[in-house]
Amino acid sequence: MSSPARTPVIRSWSAISTLGIGPEAHRSGLLTRALPEPDPTDAFAAEHGGSAAVIPSFPVRTLLGKKGTRSLDRVTALAVATVGGLVTGDPTDAAPFDADAPVAERGLVLGTTTGSAQSMMDFTRSTFDGEKPFFVDPAKFPNTVMNCAAGRAAIWFQLRGPNATVGGGRVAGLHALNYSRRLLLTGRAETVLCGAAEEHSPARADLRALTDPGDTTRLGEGCAVVEVGGPEGGPGLAEILGVRFGMARRPEDAREVLADCVRRTLHDTRVAAEDVWAHLPSRSGGTESEAVTGVLGTDFRTHTCDDLLGDTSAAAAMFAVVAALVHAAEDDSAAGRIALITAIDPTGAVGCALLRPLPAP
Image 1: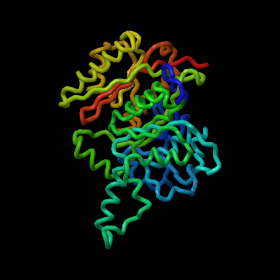
Image 2: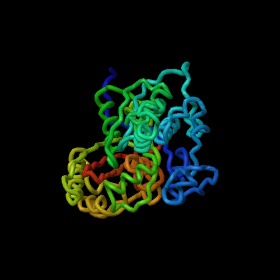
Image 3: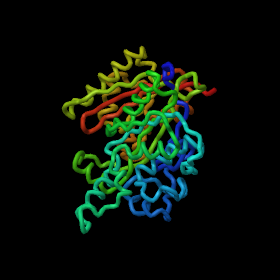
Image 4: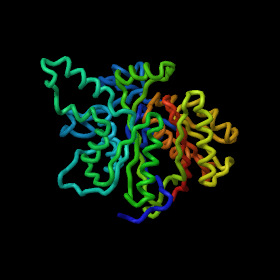
């Protein structure tokens, strides 16, 4: 077991979203607030792009190769490709695993809602549609398990550190960040790839209509992953100062529960309200903004993602983390100040995180 690290640091990141594939496409989209043109050759985007914020072109076999990709569902492919952007350094060529490749001791923590709801429903349906209940495709069964994406990504890139999947809906990204932070602080890992993924699918649309019928935001999809390590590992992009969670028993209590989380996190990390440079909510407007302004006032910037990315559910908070890194790098007023990330899930779960952007080396 390695010695415990001090304040964990985010060193790098990668993302795949409706803004495109890789950090450059995502950074450009966030700063220009412009979406790329749809790809008419992508069948998935052509079918769903009119009503949802889907990735404009996601050629799985081009990104990952033909070997081992036939049975991948969309959320697993998203996770593998995004992790590959960090592991290989090239988000457009996440080469398949090589048995002779060096083993990496990096851990992997991935946030999710349920894994792939579409895979679960399709596999279950096949037990009724087939001639016999057991006439199913065994290669598709792993996709029905919540930790499939994290497991496949770790196998794909020979990641031998701790591997975990954390369910939490819109708060999942913050749970993954906190889990990774604890692995580092307790010395159980030296480097962790931490992210969250969500796919667009008809099954997910149906589930949201049942659980949150008032939500009319376009469904989005994507994956964002950050590399987290100790400060001794070299220059970083931001320090993770603190993460806290709460639970609202009733929807109308979510604002005050989140406000209390923010107050407690500021107190625990000895951060003054005036030190907060920006608020990055998982959803723009509404309850999250009301909770934060009730604690901080209005003297801070607000950067949103969902107006571009859509409702990315489990990936929303991690996309907010990435947005904090992108905007801090472009804003001189962020130097030495704090980014506040918040999230509220319709189930009542709330969470917040404080990041301190670091100056460029």
